[in-house]
Length: 630
Image 1 (cartoon, helix red, strand yellow):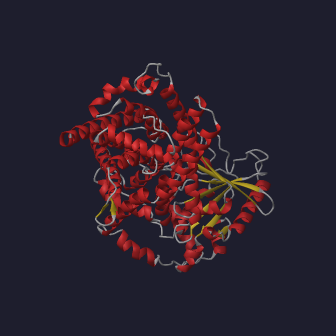
Image 2 (cartoon, rainbow, N blue to C red):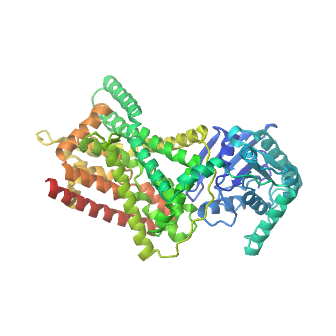
Image 3 (cartoon, helix red, strand yellow):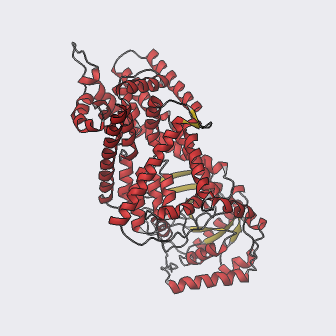
């Protein structure tokens, strides 16, 4: 700790999962926050700032949820290493704000007692006080503060109640600590991993403190009891879960239509303006046919991706996601998976990268590896552009059973196929390769609550920025490369075939065509698959370039759908969809798998088995469909 560390102090928010820690972080920092990754790992890092009443600029770090510094998962290990100052390139926090759920003090106080061993200033933020009082919980905060030896500040983070008192307490404790301790003095560091006897002693001490502070035990939420009687029912609960997932997938296909039209018209206007102000030539072709058509062809699917993220964030913020994991524990246990794997796998429907990252909450190494290996089989949002294009080209839009859209049903079937494949692969891995005991699911079910619009909006904004940044960097670079490969060399003067036949892209596609012919793919598809290995969604824009479809976004989409419907045939289309269910077409996913497993062995295994599975499944689908429909 430098001599100037207290000029701009840094505090860490530590707490159990579902204690309202992130809501408190949002209340403290507002829009003054940023999301990144810790150096060397893929654990998400959220940091923000607030200004205290004395003008002190305080940096706030929102650490992953943990029940103890013993660190039984990679997420908890990051929290432990930050708090203890063992993390590379991260300064030690000047103070710790331990956030505890006022309705569940046992776990919160247990963590406080352990954090006191660290020797840093600690403030206990007793959150959700409104919920606690409503349910009859009560405790003498003055006695509680005296017994545990740290300031106790009651807060209601979602309403910003108690935030000012918390800020004042943070400033006061930091000033007090800085006056009593010299820089770089870590003599107060006493924490060591507690043994079983010490853990039991902690629990006894918590009971003594609660008794001394006249804790009055309240009642659980009546609404939570009533809802859980249905949503956790072994039959009704499972049916409800699948109904919710069905609605989500239907909504992803239907709700974003109007925003997509707005994006399409905006891109069309931009292309028309470029066409009007720029002379014909290579630069105009690059901007209109490469950059705008390519990146715009991906951005048009942002509304669908946002819709999917919206529902996932609602389920997380309401407290239902933990119930979903509980419901799926028995089913997933049947194939050797831990119930906690459900949440990473569900997150993988938006993107396999956060899904793989969230597998860190699974304590057992083999269970965590299996979850990482099958995460890419969950249908991520990057597949949506491809699915939407092929389904629109080959599946007529009709209403079935009076309420279901036929295209939505096909989309649902693609998702289910990925899920079933993942369960089968998990069973094989657990049975033959990554054997081990099946660990029981132990987790705390949070109380149901109405999702906070601000939390959902912030989550959507963060994920939208990440996707758009991806479109403006990786996808933009790939589209420029594809445009160049598809444009040069120019066809000879006496050429009779399409220009792309003479280009570098045509040469590359024809080189790989013999390998892909058995699964029904032509050289044009090969060209789309190659850049798609870096980012799946690039395939749509690549196909537009390959088939020389130009114009506004709607014209490109309709023209491409018409072109492939006339040149592919149903067997090829279904084989292409099948390939996209299984193929590991995302370099970022493989890179994250490497970082999470700290080895290239597992990403190599992931790539190899997914490529083999994709080729085999596409071969079967193509030939079976060809046999029946010609």
